[in-house]
Amino acid sequence: RDTTALALFSLVCFMDIFVMKNAFGGAQEAQVAFYSRAALAGKAFLYLASAFNLVALPVISAAHARGDDTLGHLRRFLAQVAGVLVIGLIGLWLFTPLALHRGLGDLPENGALVPVVRLFALAVVPLALFQLVLFHGLAVAAPGFSRLLAVVALGYFAALRQWHATPRS
Image 1 (spheres, rainbow, N blue to C red):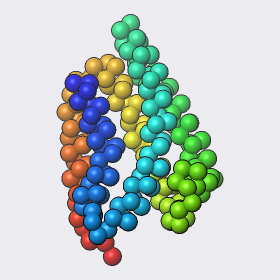
Image 2 (cartoon, one colour; image 1 turned 90 degrees about the vertical axis):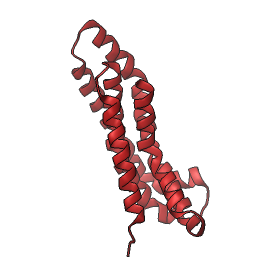
Image 3 (cartoon, helix red, strand yellow; image 1 turned 45 degrees about the vertical axis):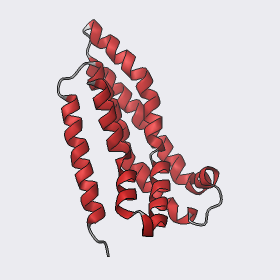
């Protein structure tokens, strides 16, 4: 059950690139590459939150085993992650061109990536926070968590397919 929940969360986080590649492969390869670079750079914020999960899972599991209130731990970890993400967003906002140059090299499209990477980073913040909620659910063995994630993953996949299938002006 835990493996299923983590696999579904990974799908939700990284499915968009696969949908883009399938929807726009071939003739629009440059757009897919642009989207993929922006998405991966913006999704770095998921890795910031993942570091907290390494600590949160055993702390919350131990509290649950003792019969303590685990929601207090969750709120504390969410506040800490939110603080780190805000600091990260401020740093990214100030230094996006430099970060892209260091990460991708001297590509001509780096200038166009700046606003897109910033938007991706903002969009990933709720996912990063939900990641802690997921690990809390796994630590306390919350029933039905995998089913909820399956519904979210399938809904997200359907929304992405519809979004990318709709012509834009």
